Image 1 (cartoon, each protein chain N blue to C red):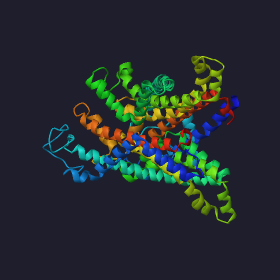
Image 2 (image 1 turned 90 degrees about the horizontal axis):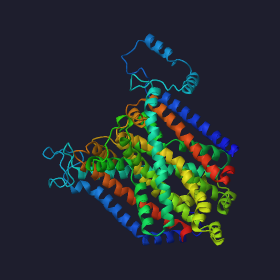
Image 3 (image 1 turned 120 degrees about the horizontal axis):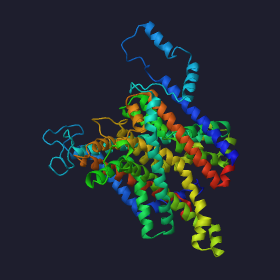
Image 4 (image 1 turned 90 degrees about the vertical axis):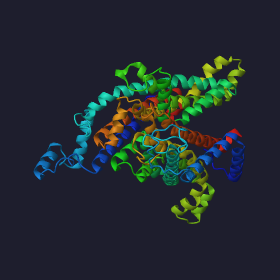
Length: 289
Length: 307
């Protein structure tokens, strides 16, 4: 992570220039926009909805009928529509979960780093303990506890455990900033701790947090589809990339396209997001330039 | 080194205790008790049942009893697999899961680290691009995609290996699961190794070693490799956690009767004792291996012992 520099404007301008010059990043961004647009426009592109059944075309491979571009599943549901619907749901859940987890991480980390001392120690020890558990388990415990199927529960479960790394990064930054002259000045001016935190510290952490949020999105997509794949996330008849891949894996021997179509979309999405994240990290890394 | 080891243990033990306490608390907070699904019981029968299982005692007593039972390896009965205790299920599944996980980590280390070293030494050549490209792909692909894809390719189309199942651990059946589990770890190790070796090779003391006239091979073996291994070693702890998580998917995809599949089934059936028992076992396992990774790290990097 980059240090917040006094010449932050220069850093960001330079980063933007380096990002634009990176051909892989440009390609990834274009593909991402195309997929997102396709997912948003899916209802307009096809007469089918994600749960409408077409009795005349059951289990058709892609290209077998003009009515279904990417074929159908065993119940005659259109796979083009279901896959794009799944992309949309995956993107929606992962964006919201990223926002949620980055928000919690920002609050937790900035309070711990700003307060320092005992409170900092206790708060970060709590993070350490949660870190020691593979955090999928926390989600599994939560979904055992709350029940599964609801997208809101899924969102909370993913978002609530995804904040740990953000909290660590933000805390490190806050710790570095809290004795800077501008914070001392605000303190000397008689501002309360909460006001200093909110008005002076958090805005200075924004850059780091935005970058980290971008890196969190693919993790969240992976997480959501992982849970849905295991049967703990999005449930039938709703489609997410995870439960489509699961259904496809079960029908692999007779209908491999059911596996390959959603898998291809997921891989494309993840690779693009990772390229974007790596590009962003490289562009902001002051060491290499 | 001894005091470093003791300090690491002093952190790991309370962590496990916190996890067990959380598990116990969740079990008690969960809606519904173990006897809710039976026909409505008369209060007298209900009270008798509660007394037999100790549910009428204060929570603190129940907590201590739970700890005592855990110390004897007793995780209580499973709610969904009616005829089994959780301990029996764990004992059945654990050997397979551990074999799978350790084989995968071993394979990842044997492939990932040499690949990373090769890429760093051959920087900018075709070999470097091949390793880096494959590694980027390997890191990005989730195992629930690579698993079915490999089964499709090597099982259904090429008929080289069985698609799923395990036949009492015949090695042929474990090849695809282990490979699938190892891919992301190997890919990540290769990237880490490449980056850290490149950095070490640029450092002053490597330049000094070269200036003293040492050959490249000697510089690499005597001076560069050990510090370059540090990031890879410190990744081994998280890698184990990653493999443990991955085994949930692998066992589901390939139909292997390990603990991961019980955990997933337990979560779907809301079988609290099973899920929590498995989580405690996994957590203990992860913490132990993290501890081992920390100790190896401390041995490789004397500076870390005083951090």
